[in-house]
Image 1 (cartoon, helix red, strand yellow):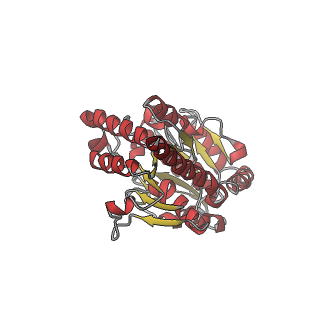
Image 2 (cartoon, rainbow, N blue to C red):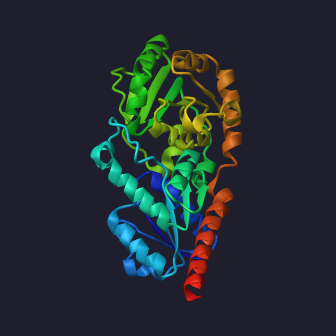
Image 3 (spheres, helix red, strand yellow):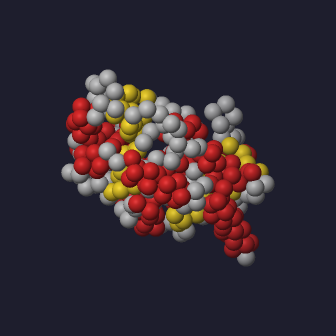
Amino acid sequence: MRIAALTNPDLVNSNYRAYQPMMALRRQGHELLLNERDRPIRPQTLLEVDVVHMHRIAVPEIQQLIGRVRAAGVGIVWDNDDDVTAVPRSNPLYARFGGYRSRDMRAGVRAMVRLADVVTTPSAVLADQYRELGAEEVRVLENYMPTEFAKVRPAKHRGIAIACLAALEHQVDYQELGLRDVLLRLLDAHSDLRVTSFGLGLGLGHERYEHVPEVPFLELAKTLSRFDMGIAPLVDIPWNRARSNVKLKEYASAGIPWLASPVGPYRGMGEQQGGRLVPDDGWHEALERLITSGRERRKLAKRAARWVSGEGIEQHAGRWEAALRDAIGSAAERARDRAM
């Protein structure tokens, strides 16, 4: 296949929804054209490929361009992994996607899922939404780990360390669930405990708290391997119900156990995947239990590593390949129908 991939290079999610799967397909022998910051793909080039894969892009200009590309007989795959029509006000993306523009975003999503031969998403919730909006074919494809993560092993370190991997949009989760107070109480109670947040600053004001604004994507698992556990709190709102379970896979890739809210993508997960689900009022107890029991941490860490060993992108690249091939097949069928 000759594939063109269009995405926003500044979106971290693009690594899972475009770059990693498409690069895996290139390693399998397919030709790949990527729109990189310094080398954007020319519109004319899209008419010369077999299939165009897009992550999230839904602006009117792209709708018009993809309409022409589709009419020229090129297969179209559109992917989205967040419910951009339900962005909470606390989310930094709200100014771009929320408020009065929610209607425009919904119109853009509707247009793209109807233009696409195949729609892909990691969320069953979003898959149902896209079917309701008129998508002909929707595939749920989870986020899979890059090959670099498979080489990571837990790193030795002093004391007990908690990782809080959270983009800025998770402010509402930490605030509503009282995680700042919980973490401060634990820091005061355990002199060997340290807490690090990646992305979102928690403002704990404690000497054993550190805020790391950003970690290069391919260094994420290695960075997390220096911790003993990771947390993934979510409040039960529409935005969170449409998320993926990728954060738990990232912790597991580092060989550390996790604690998460029983919301959206985390429902039904647990010790077999290397972690535990925590009710809204149970975070202090759950964290205290893991802090004080190295045996439980090690048991869960082994299960996490076992689970994530089957979640690599190379193992699941065939699912992405099938989606793209089916889009090409739909485009060929459209061409035959027009010729009749």
